[in-house]
Amino acid sequence: MKIALVGYGKMGKIIDGIATQRGHEVVARLKETPTAENLNNPDVVIEFSLPEAAFKNIKACLENKVPVVCGTTGWLEKRKEIEDLAVQNDTAFLYGSNFSLGVNLFFALNEKLAGLMKNRDEYACQLEEIHHIHKKDAPSGTAISIAEGIIQHHPKFDAWKLEETQDNQLGIFAIREDEVPGTHSVFYRSEVDEIEIKHTAFNRNGFALGAVIAAEWIRDKKGNFGMKDVLGL
Image (cartoon, rainbow, N blue to C red; front, side, top):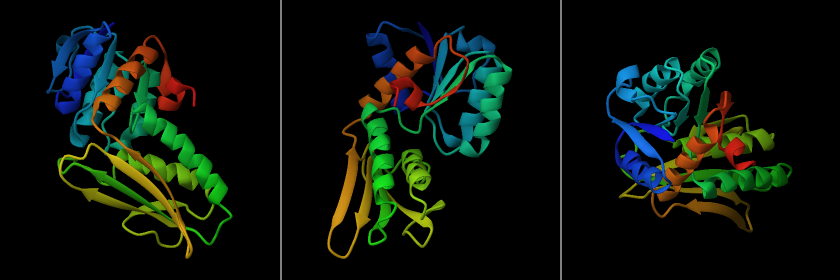
């Protein structure tokens, strides 16, 4: 199929290579705001840009009735507006805070563990995420998804916050160092032991492959979706 890449940084270039390997044609590689002309009539857009550009980019694509797979985090206060726009324009929008297959399995494991721990008051929960120093938003979108999964299944928590867990607010330590692609950990600590689940990305290839698989899946669909839909989780 024909894919337009909106945002052409490190992730965009890796997605370009994987999409080509899988037999797709990349018809646009944009660092600027997409238009009907520069999108070059794609079947799907994959959007990995910056938080401050994402909303405008996605809006332009949906208004041109092109389905969008978006992996940009840090803009989600406007997500509802985008999802409404996808429906209004009879096209599709798929957001993923993380497109890695391993991370999405981790999300499911995290929710299961939160349900098991909901009545274990002796354990305190804390999240930690580590990313490269170039990452613009904190906490990461992946860490927010993990926190939301815990909040959904653990009645003690009803919100998340940066830094340490306090009362009903689940804490997330956001660490920025070197060129770390992404490490996410969930800790349950008591006075006598600790349970930890952890996902470590070795490079960006898993994120890029997942984004291309999502683009293959969303073609010709209508509505709003996530990676749970793509992977049947």
